[in-house]
Image 1 (cartoon, rainbow, N blue to C red):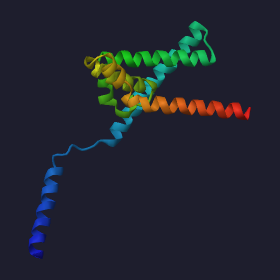
Image 2 (image 1 turned 45 degrees about the horizontal axis):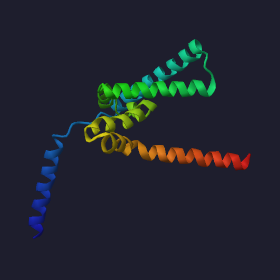
Image 3 (image 1 turned 90 degrees about the horizontal axis):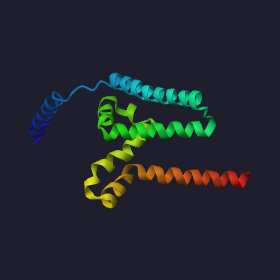
Image 4 (image 1 turned 60 degrees about the horizontal axis):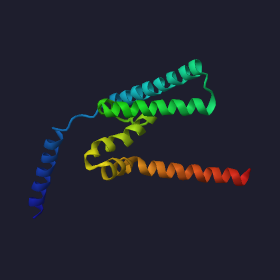
Length: 153
């Protein structure tokens, strides 16, 4: 019986090596570098928009931050609608997910994908599958923080 187990074990190891020979090699450094470069580029675009709004429109403080965020969200949704953001995500990986444009993509993608199911069951319901928990817990955290500041101050 042990002899049979030894042969099976050897066959399993050979099979595992055979299967792994078809696995593509993962290029971790290249993937991380690409994610860093794309994420940094998206953030640089956001910083450029911020500087232009500050210089051209004279915005300051919260108005400047809010307007910059809205423009970046709009750009993310627009690129998602044209299918460009998905191609960026395929090549950039986490570099396209982390900035605010990635959040806009995660809200818009399901809405576009399920729009054929109707406005309520498709567009409205599917839009918050991924982003819903983030919005809910982010809002809840903001409310709790505001209440704490109100109680302390």
